[in-house]
Image 1: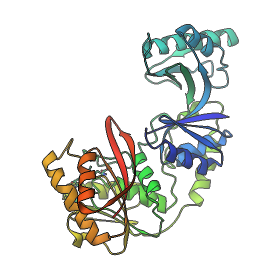
Image 2 (image 1 turned 90 degrees about the vertical axis):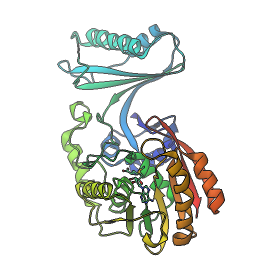
Image 3 (image 1 turned 30 degrees about the vertical axis):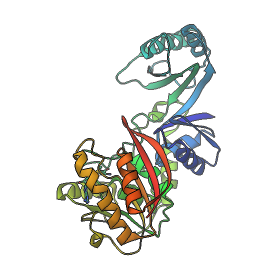
Image 4 (image 1 turned 180 degrees about the vertical axis):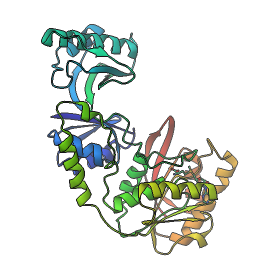
Length: 376
Ligand SMILES: C[S@@+](CC[C@H](N)C(=O)[O-])C[C@H]1O[C@@H](n2cnc3c(N)ncnc32)[C@H](O)[C@@H]1O
């Protein structure tokens, strides 16, 4: 089966590696996406267990095109009977990247008509369109001269894990938190600290890794349940298989936070995620070496950027103070940091003598950020 999955721009290589590990099949990173060929059962596993993917699709078409009529022709040529029952409704969700003489609304209109006409020709039934609560969602991406179409097996994005009972005003996407942990080289028995943990996304994702927990294993509302290709019993079996391989106890995973209301929120999130006993979340100041645990080997952190919550001037002072504290408390450790204040971070790293080993651009919502991997 040809599959593709969406992810955050900038972590595609990490997402592809994860998809390979989960399915045992080669996955190819692409912009904001991963393509792979794997048996249908891989779809259950990717949806339940992937930490870095947003949505998983069955690929229906990946072709070059020139005009809207080409899109109609390509979409008309697909057999939809495997995916849509005659009494089911559908919707087209379209995205467009590049310069075109038409909009994404035009794509949805033309492809939607092609789906209806194709089904009518094959089955003699007119499919219903429901844009609000469709049974089947078809995704179209027009990217330059390329047309990609797929059936969404996921629905609500996998990055919405369900444990966020406290929404921190500058929360990090769990997919990015997981990608940072995977990038950091952290081994599960090593001491990990997020010294500015806010709603505790990084410690929670780390704890779920430590427990080998499939991050969406309790979720019940996958789109695939409405597709005749899939089977609710097979999904349950996969859920059970994943449950058997998880386990563990407390881990040396720490979160520090300066403000009690965020710390309290982080604890509530950790409790909802079922990992409150696995992690240690406590009040602390990231700029004071005294708050750090012993033997820290990895720091993974999402400090304030000076964009949403904290004035720029405060960030200018915070970064060097924080890095100096790290030098004292965790010299030689690995630091993985995400920030939109790149220049400020690079200057501070240079001043304090923290070596930047690698960097990558990552799109966090609408913010262009960098993830730096450093030696403290
Ligand atoms: C960008 S937020 C982290 C959000 C978090 N990753 C999440 O997903 O919820 C940065 C956090 O750092 C905290 N903070 C700022 N200065 C700090 C300091 N000196 N020590 C500890 N925490 C600090 C802020 O209160 C804020 O909660």
